[in-house]
Amino acid sequence: MSDATTNMPTDPMLEAIVGPTPGQMLRKRIFGHQGLMIGVVVLGLLVLVAIFAPLLAPHDPYAQSLMARMKPPVFLGGTWEHPLGTDHLGRDYLSRLIYGARVSLLIGLVAATISGVIGTAMGVAAGYFGGKVDAVVTYLINVRLAMPVVLVALAVVAILGGSLQVVIVVLGLLLWDRFAVVMRSSTLQVRGREYVAAAKAVGCSTPRVLMSEIMPNIANNLIVVMTLEMAHAILLEAALSFLGLGVQPPTPSWGLMVSEGKNMMLFEPWMVLIPGAVLFVLVLAINLMGDGLRDVTAPENRS
Amino acid sequence: MLNFILKRLGLAVLVAFTVSFISFSLMFLSGDPAAALAGETASDQDVEAIRVLYGFDRPMLIQYWDWLSSALVGDLGESYYFKLPVASLIAERLQVTMLLGLCGISFALLTAVPLGVAAAIRPNSIIDRIALFLSVAGQAMPSFWFGLILIVVFSIQFGILPPSGTSTWRHFIMPTIVLGYYAMPAIMRLTRAGMLEVLSSDYIRTARAKGASEFTVLFKHALRNAIIPVVSLAAVQMGFMLGGSIVVESIFALHGAGYLAWESIARNDLPTVQALILVFSLFYIVFTFLSDVLNAWLDPRMRAG
Image (spheres, rainbow over the protein chains, first blue to last red):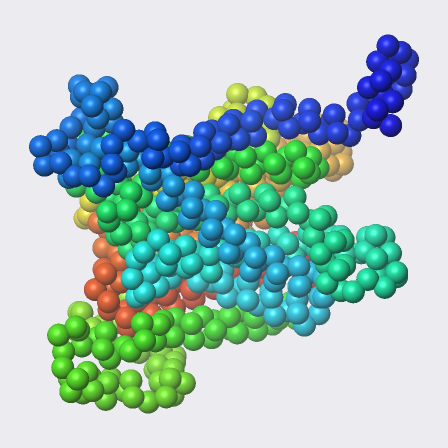
């Protein structure tokens, strides 16, 4: 069908009747969505920075230098030797920021994946089976929502000892609630459709119905929640590290950099402003991408 | 209605007991609470003595039962660090946190609802774009960073607001803005979406057709219906904010329950941490229960779910 239209562009009558194909309309929606495009480009750049950190960083992010402590950034009268200055231990700020992108993106991706697996399993089971399964999942979601995330995460990380792995696992085990809520309602919407009934009628097993009929049809919602929870996990890690009970020094975490800069805030406010601004831009880009994906994949859900 | 309330109440009580069990089990996450309490330099006899003194040698479920039955009559144990009853410690600190939470949610509602209404009246206008920008930025703003920026600008640059403490109302201005801005985006979006939906409904067209003034249409007919879900969201956000105040209180050195939680976690003061998790969870459970009941009372369609 689409071949026919592309092969016969000379006939304006046919063009007018057939109109743009669904694929062309989707592409138009994607590339016409300003927020989505900005989010994808900025996030893509930050992912490249994280991947190629060793090539891009001008210095070793852990190398201290007592001779070059608290050098100002270049726009505040510093030199190009340290474009964004150095911290209280003489470590190059730009290099620490570049390596910090790795920490934030890794935590966001792995924590959101862990909680995505937990939440999706619970939500799909609740939505598909209903009844007692649904009651148990609803109860578990309520328990999880009642627990204050920051407080529980801080307490558990403090007891188990702060490290990158502990923070990732704790956040992954805490942030599954929105996955469960959204996947439950999405499953409820599609489980009564004809193709699900058809799959059951031809004798498909329950796992097969779930994996090849339900999951592909709710995957767009899963991706949207995944991006938003990635942003959530990144912000939480930064807050935990800022409070001194997350990722431990000397790991270059942006939240930790803000916390270290806080003591020098009176005289050197840029030490707080720069890492926070980068964190803001990353989370903003992920949120713009998530909101954009929701608009593009389900235009009727636009609010 | 009564049926609905009883069902919700049952769920709330069940959730509260589960949360109490989870916060109690935190004590055992570290392996041996007696060894943790005694410190790294303690001898084996000291650890054993502490184990017996605090009753850690008994089965966990019996310890939970003891803790729960005293918690039910308001005895939450004694703080390891302050050597004071945890309940009175928390009660004293909660006043600041409650005040901050109330100020924060009021600030959020007073900015988000007018902005959401204005944005819905003229979609895609300049006000709508500003509102959208504020809500998108608010969702991405790390609250600790926002707080530090306010301190840099208003305390260090201009010197017009005190950076920390609780002695006057001026100490609460910046914490209120930071905490309120955290809740603002969700309230704004919900107000805007609700108003947009209501404004395109038939009864608004009827109200306009019978010649009601634009003011009456907007505020008497539209906003009164659009605000129902916002009220319940605000109650839920209030519960979240009390839990989230730990970051704000630590930045502005407000000595509330959140600050107490941060101190206690850093000092390994487990009875206080357990009790605080329980208290914050109970607040959230009560707020969501009240908002569900309020919703069902305002909108009978909700009683079915």
